[in-house]
Length: 284
Image 1 (spheres, rainbow, N blue to C red):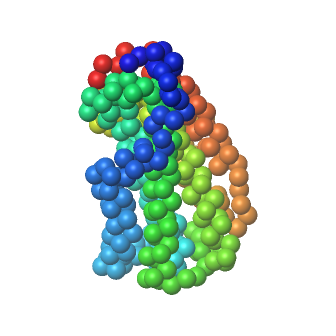
Image 2 (image 1 turned 60 degrees about the horizontal axis):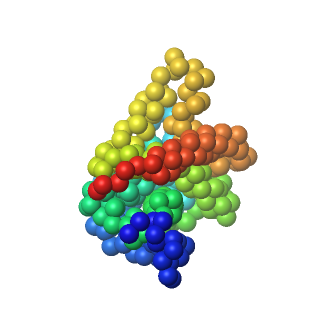
Image 3 (image 1 turned 90 degrees about the horizontal axis):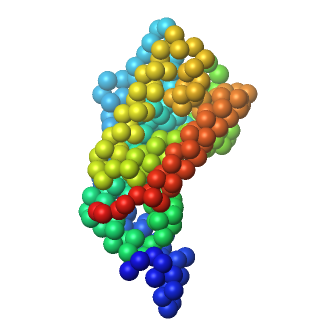
């Protein structure tokens, strides 16, 4: 049935096709969702076991969040966020947003969804919304479990900072929430990149792997100091700006720049995804 014919079919409402609840349930039941959730849920326990066996690492030349992980529950949560930024959290974001449209094409079910008929723009909007919801849940899950595991192992206390000062526990939680929110918003570029790749390929691994690969490349380029100010156009340049939220005096500059760049890239990539998919000849 064509979309044009369905527009005149009795009882057809485009706004009722592909309910968000149905798509969420479908994604919850997928094995990759369960596996990814299980792996991330186990990470705080794995890191805790590593500290228990090998002790807290120390560097005489500098102090990082990792060296302060065992100071308190909030410190352990900050450590999990520090370890997740840059790679560990990129993978689930790329997976949930890149394995959306491409997986339907890989299963040869995409054309049947459109023949239902689900408007193409609505299909993409639903898929991307659910991908973002699962990505957000993952990003929140890691430091939240880190806070629970760290508090159980090391107790509740102030958040000690690499600068040598501390934040009271009552002030640390809101600051950690701001840091998590920044990481979520900074991953919008990765999510949009994976989603765009998902609309141009029928291979989910290609979309997910492509997004992860490009993210790694931008991180490598950011380490090339010869690029100078050009590095500020790389999302990876701002990915650790969330640490500014944990300073005694909260700094917004780096986080605002990072979020602005990520959102800008996301808008462009999503526009490419919607425009390209609207004209795509779907045969799978």
